[in-house]
Length: 391
Ligand code: SF4
Ligand code: ZN
Image (cartoon, rainbow, N blue to C red; front, side):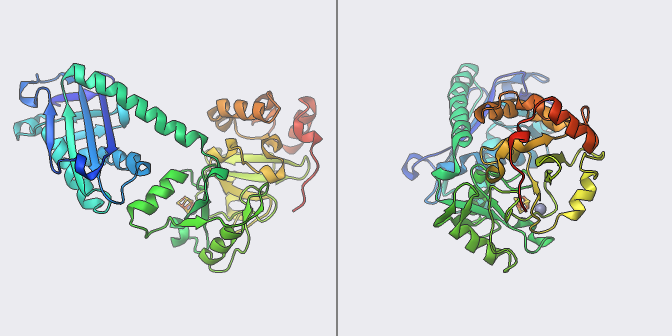
């Protein structure tokens, strides 16, 4: 390494912002502060990368997605290295890179080149300003942090009721030919890697083609079950007629389909009319008498009482709302429980069961059905007051 930036050793940020076409001097790269020639070998220096883009189809919802590309772009360079993102980014330039004449301003050239050629509709004009002067980096870093937080806040509070379109993902149709994920603000794809804004961005940056299509939700048929006319119509067509009806918020009645790459499986357990959740990482037997791998082999298409989903879905406000919601959860592996701890506590309180987290059993309390049933009685689990569910 010749010099490095960020990585906790010096102030760092990277930020992409949308501007009006007239505000941008296309192709401009400026460095505000010292260039690499005056930097000393082996040291860490402040760095801030501000990318400003304008284009007729550009809008704010895709800023983050384009900003994330900076990571790959800097890594594409043979003598440059990048990890993480936003104000946690970390960039290094190798000695060889310095010897060959790499300058800080070349980061700007690389970013401009790739974004312009990958997204011609979005990025019609682009300018990059790179800050290396410490005071200026710190000042801009504060502004960038406010922008990161406001982006996150928007994501955290968007509810399904606030939008009139959802998005599909059919990426998995290459091996699960009739599977459709319906992605909403409160329900991500079952693999856990496609959120609502990812799907919206996916649609936009491919110029309308591709696996993510908008679904006009149309007339609402049942808000609790999460059933809409437009969603049914879309799913029927995208599943080549196989799935005629889906309830986005139900495990028991017309649930969505499962391909193979779900992070978790929810299973209805009739003996206590609760829901057992198992995540892919948990290799042992669950209280339903099967392991994740066995269960995964049983699910296919639309299977009432069994559904593959993401980890995030568990703490969504819409989680199997039609079936009684989060109060139905009786068991999950301790690692998963720990991962979701804060959100589970918050959701429990929102549903009037502030100690729900402590009442959900894991493998330390119960490995078999009998043990689980004893535990539920002992802790007076709220599921005991809920009616059984019908398939
Ligand atoms: Fe898309 Fe993930 Fe669903 Fe596959 S599982 S269709 S990748 S959202
Ligand atoms: Zn899949």
